[in-house]
Length: 79
Image 1 (spheres, rainbow, N blue to C red):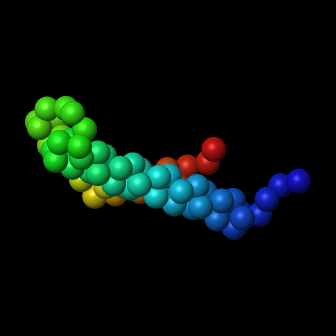
Image 2: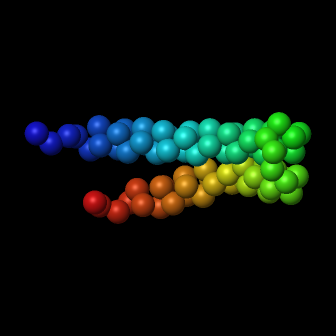
């Protein structure tokens, strides 16, 4: 049985939303890990904590936008 075009588009949008949300949660986890390293809770060098925290901020703020642009650019193509 085939799905209607609207149902297919809704499923694609739902999948994109789940992916972007997972990326944002991953970014927050990285920030928290980086802060734990910086505060000395996890025994790693300070610089590693800063790098992990900055990467987490980048992951939270910029990667979802990139994913959304790529996702929307591929919306016009047929699979």
